[in-house]
Image 1 (tube, rainbow, N blue to C red):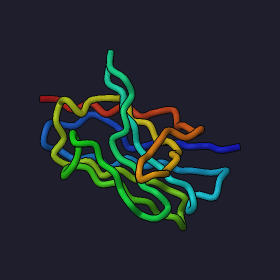
Image 2 (image 1 turned 90 degrees about the vertical axis):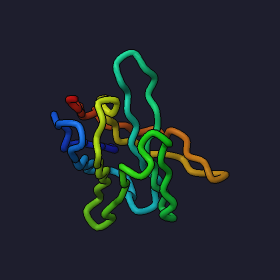
Image 3 (image 1 turned 120 degrees about the horizontal axis):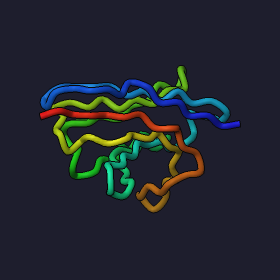
Length: 121
């Protein structure tokens, strides 16, 4: 049974930082592409960062230069370091498996329950 459990969300002031973690079990973590999605109220869920097993990261334009995705294969954990946070980063953030082919990322089958990130102005 695959489980993805996010942690690290919370309330932070604009300009601050947070680090999200996603503990993964039930799959061969080191060989799976992983990513972070977010969904703001009334908006669609979008991929903000992806990391393939080959180590080619993806960032959406809205977070490029501020967010960093990383993984610790020994700990089966995915991270998202978020710096210079803005109120528009407020959303529920989800960890998910991805499919990676033709140099693009696609949603996989497994999702975490989400963690709320709120950035106050």
